[in-house]
Length: 172
Image (cartoon, rainbow, N blue to C red):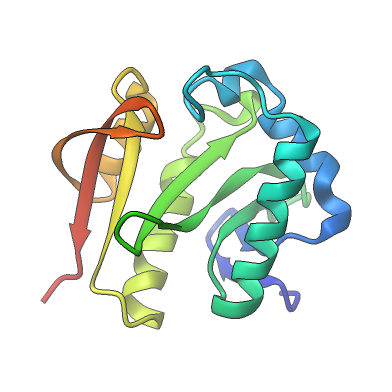
């Protein structure tokens, strides 16, 4: 694995981003289908929004070995999407999130990445829990959160969207 690689699963490598990979993020979050649950208006992200977010993820990876990571298929090094943790500003808690290119929906990659992220966080960090938000209409993301063991704790306004909030505690 490279120095930016953090987690390896059966089919994926989750790694940090580089600034020269901006076009990959623009392609991912520029897709209206992928972006529809990522903002209040559901609009694709602009190049400027992607660049700003990418800089945050690069800095977070450098300082904490966390962030929303590139999810690359091991067999052919194809980027399938991104998955990782942000820090929820309101509470300072790690917040899991993922987004995949449309052609990789329904293949189990989101669950595989989220499971590996869960295991990594509890094994290799001091965190004892994490949270996840999914738009109330985003059934596939809600299903992933439940498959990795997260428990629904309610509905909250998350950046202007009604989202189901989930939480997972580290096993005793």
